[in-house]
Amino acid sequence: MKASIKAISYYLPEAVLSNDLINQEFPEWDIEKISSKTGISSRHISASDEFSSDMAVSAAEKLFTEHNIDRSTIDYLLFCTQSPDYFLPTTACIIQEKLGLKTSIGALDFNLGCSGFVYGLSLAKGLIAGGMAENILLITSETYSKFIHPKDKSNKTIFGDAAAATLITSEKGFCSIENFVFGTDGKGAENLIVKQGGMRFPVSDENEDIKDEFGNIRNDKNLFMNGTEIFNFTGEFVPKLTESILEKSNLSKDDIDLYIFHQANKYMLNHLRKKIKIPEEKFFIAMEHCGNTVSSTIPIALYEAQKEEKLHNIKNLILAGFGVGYSWAACNLKIEQ
Image 1 (cartoon, rainbow, N blue to C red):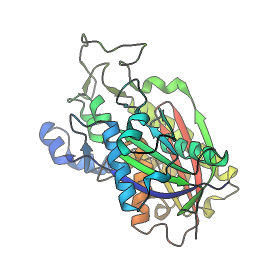
Image 2: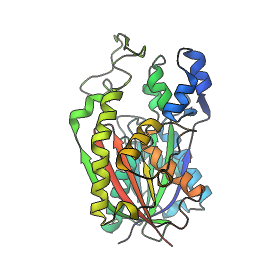
Image 3: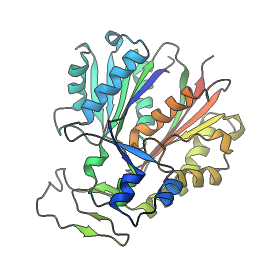
């Protein structure tokens, strides 16, 4: 049974952290360098009393309103986050109640980062193919800013908070979901990690702040990213990932009209584009206004591409997500005429 993306909407928190504000706090952090290297001019930060479920609900309400969707037709909810409201209960259950969705639906959380949206599409397609659901609400929502130390200028520059809501349906949408390839390598787990907070390392109040060689301050309650290792990982695996999804889909590089990769940062994306030899006009970037929003970067970029009419008169798209885990995934979409 065919599965298609019917509609996408996204939500950004009200508070904006601009490059100017970062520069005021860290005068040694060159504002022009920030913009040119990351491709980010601002990012949105969740309020102190605003959490992943709140942003998820806001994104879903926008989806229902913006696309005139009847919420009573939703029969499954998939929620991707690494910053849940609680360890338990499942945040998807909270979202179901807040949205007023019927109680006969399925609802679950899954914990993935930058590859999460593509994995979510695969789960949704499997539910539809198995006859278990017809209209699936896939929500990605992250509040990474709550993990970042106030004096960690590096991560503060890159990450923003956001939520995206996507309707995947057995009916015709604007693009059909076709083939998938996946990858996992847990040896990179410690290169992008919040060490404390789970059962292995509970949160401790006796944490000592550590300053790295670049002047960033953090402790084990905060987000740690080894930028060099993450960059090396993407350079090694993403070209192979692209080759694999093309082969799985029986397509050549020339058959692809548009590529939308996880919006990590502009420098990394352009490095990958050149390495894979993707023409610049076929490579879409949309992160200047919101930064790296983790699992929401691809749906936000897909929404913006549709808004800018980049999906008109084209046929094949490639989506690729990669990062924390290490985890990576790609799929191809076909525009439905």
